[in-house]
Image (cartoon, rainbow, N blue to C red):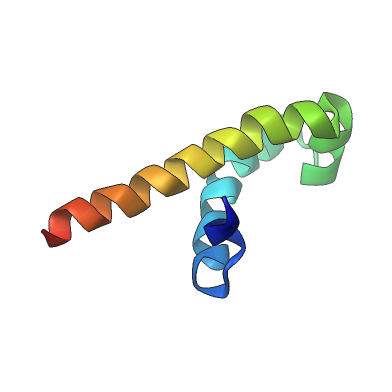
Length: 68
């Protein structure tokens, strides 16, 4: 998971995370921090953040397979 904090991956991960969170913000009229507060940070990190991480990781793996 450390790769996601590297400069070259941080923007990509932030985009994937936004793709997961912003539709809920639009639908509910809530800001991201309000959603985190409602869900609780632990739950948010283990579900929403976790799903975004898996999707970002899958994107990296997919690109690596296409290079072969």
